[in-house]
Structures are given as C-alpha cells and as structure tokens.
Amino acid sequence: METERVTEFPFTHLDRRPRKRARLGWDVPQAPKAQVGMFCGQELGNVTSFASLMAPSDHTTISLFDKEVARNGSPPWREDDKDGHYMFSLGENLTSRYKIQSKMGEGTFGQVLECWDREKKEMVAIKIVRGVKKYREAAMIEIEVLQQLGKHDKGGNRCVQLRNWFDYRNHICIVFEKLGPSLYDFLKKNNYRSFPIDLVREIGRQLLECVAFMHDLRLIHTDLKPENILLVSHDYIKVPDYNKNSSRSPKDSSYFKRIPKSSAIKVIDFGSTTYERQDQNYIVSTRHYRAPEVILGMGWTYPCDVWSIGCILVELCTGEALFQTHENLEHLAMMERVLGPLPQHVLKRADRHAEKYVRRGRLDWPEGAASRESIRAVQKLPRLQNLVMQHVDHSAGDLIHLLQGLLRYDPSDRLSAREALRHSFFTKDNLRR
Ligand SMILES: Nc1ncnc2c1ncn2[C@@H]1O[C@H](COP(=O)(O)OP(=O)(O)OP(=O)(O)O)[C@@H](O)[C@H]1O
Image (cartoon, rainbow, N blue to C red):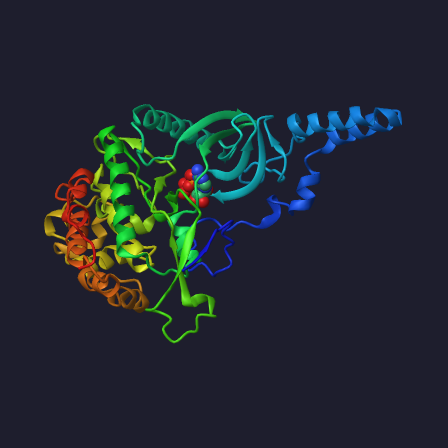
C-alpha cells in the first residue's frame, strides 16, 4: 500500500456541486511577493530610510531591528473587500502574536487562515469574520457557544476547540486548533468515491457523539454537512479502487482511491448554532441536509440535526449528496422517491408558505413539477435500500435500518442522537463475516 502525506488540497477538479462562493485569487498574493510584504508600506519605508542614515557598522543593529518589526509590526491599514472580507498578504502579522501562513478555507462568515502562534509555538486556524454588523454579531454567538462547549468538555467531545478570540480592525478573529481537510474536500479530491463502510461507521459514531453532547446542552447545530466535519489529520493511504477502475492500469492515478489514515473527526462552524426554543421555524441548514419539517415550516428542534446526519452518512457511503436539488417541491419529491410517501399528518402541518406543495392531502407531484428535467431528476433516484446495497458490501442491513430511523419524516418519531448510538450498526460486532 502506498502512503503519502497530503500537504494541501488544490481544488483542481471540477466541482459538481459548488456550495462555497467561488473566490478569485486576488486576496492571496503569490508567496514570494507576500513574504516581502512582511515589511509593509510605511513601516518598510521608515525602516529603509532609517537604515540608510546609519553607519555601515550599525548593520547588526538594523538587522535586529528588522527582525523586531517582522515579528511585531502590523501591516498598513487596508480597505476590506466589497463583502467586508479582511485583506491580507501571506507572511503578514495578525496582531503581533500570529503570523499568516496560508488561506485554509472560506465561508459565508469569513476566511479561515493558517497562522503561526508565536506564543504557543503551534499552527492554528483563525477565522477572520467579515467586518459586517450581522456577521460580527453571529461571531459573538459562535464564541459563546464554543466557550459553552469547551466548559463542559470532558475530553473528546468532537467539537473543534476554541483557543482564543480577539477583535482586530473591526474583524472578530476566532482562533481554533488546526485540523485537516473537511470530509467534503476529501471526497472531492477523491473524485467523489465512497468511503469504506467501517470508516462510515466510525465517522457516524463520532458525529452522533458530538451531536448528543450538544443536545444534552440544549444546543442545536443546524448546519451539519460534510464541509463542517473535519478530519483531524491530513494523512491518507492509497488503495486500489477495484470497483470503478478495474480496466485501468496501476500507473493511472485514478486506479487508486484515498482512504484517511485515521477516522478521527471534529465538527466545526457553530455560527448557526442555537439554543432549543419553542416555535423556531425560520429556514435553517444547507439545502441538501435540510429536514422536511424545516421545508414545510412545521417548526424544528433537535431532530433537524439527526436528519442531516442521515443525509451525511448516505453521502459518505455513495460519494454523492443524496438530495441534489435547489427547490422545495422537487426536494420533497426526492425524499418520497428515496424514503416512501410523506404521511398525511405531516403534510397537514405545512405552514401557509408550504401548503402550495400539498394537494388533496398528498404532495403535489409530479403535477406541480417545474419541468420534465425535474421529474427525471427525481425518477432517477433509487430507493434507500437499493442505494445502500449498491455501495455497501457488508452491514448493509444494519445501516439501512439505522438510516430509516435517522430519516423518519415525523421529527417526533426520528431517533435521537443517543438512541442512534445504541443502534446495532454501532454496537454489533460488525466485522466482515
Ligand atoms: N479548525 C480548522 N482547521 C482547519 N481548517 C478549518 C478550520 N476551521 C475552518 N476551516 C476551513 O475553513 C472553512 C470555512 O470555515 P467555517 O465553515 O467555520 O466558516 P463559515 O464562514 O462559518 O462557513 P459557512 O459558510 O459554512 O457558514 C471550512 O470549510 C474548512 O475548510
């Protein structure tokens, strides 16, 4: 088996379902230029003119002075971009404590940068939140949630650890332990090839442990998705992918598929996390992972996280998002195709915005479909049982039974995270037999 260490995840493959806003490279200059950028603007000017006034014998002094500026100097003040994102160059300081090494990711709330923590002497991931009031306010809630999670952590709660936070030039900066690639990044880099079932089991267990821990604290994540689940390590092994590439030669890079060396994961992004409250019915979750009660406006609570986990586990087994849609009625029709008809008592609870999806007590499908393509997209989906059987070589029966519990339409019938952890998919000796 070939082993290799991933140092970065260049996104060269065509993204079949881009969910993050695509960004141009303008805010991350090329590395060599960025290194020069350590001595920025006026500060560089000052240092240079100061140096030119000095005698040659003073050069030791100036180089020490240079180093001090490099260590503690701040870059010149710059305008944020039009969306309120912080502008930076690689190699610059973010306060005197952190040095920016690379950009690791980006989301709605801001950018995540890999930084060197001079005080703790370790790499960290810093989320620099957009300098916009609503994102600043959301960041403060995220910090409060992270502090709450940290306070109750008895070790290994599977939530990313908060290391520090500060307000810098109108940007809330949240310092996290540095983790590896997200499950989504990993799948993408692996050409959307599925994970082995035993890895899906380990990831599922940790994810449910994390969510059970959050629910015990009355917290609902509301945005669970493969992008928000990070592998702790970058390491992976390459194994021959017999299924898909049996006719290919081992010289062909796609002959191999990647498997993470360690199954350890952590959940990130608590920006949409909320305390359990009565009558929450605003829209939550990223589309593909959104529960039916959210779409139907029935009000949602803890079970909406459990639904997302069901969708994520299917995705890890197949490599592709289960419900690839951008439209409510089509989404509900996809659910019916995969999971069977929505019960009348659930459809009856649709609010006034969603009642247009219901006709004579059942889903208005295919009559209400927007197009033939939409009907075809729904028709081509298999039943849950068939989908799992196509991709899973052993423990398929247990997994199907678990998924049927996680993906129950009525949130009050759905398994809780704790109940799911006691399911035979996790408790049985599921080694290959
Ligand atoms: N601790 C970490 N270690 C490594 N990478 C991280 C870490 N935290 C975040 N990232 C990377 O940054 C990306 C964006 O982070 P995050 O999801 O927290 O931002 P966001 O703006 O809240 O996103 P969203 O748009 O999903 O709400 C992640 O998908 C991941 O690639």
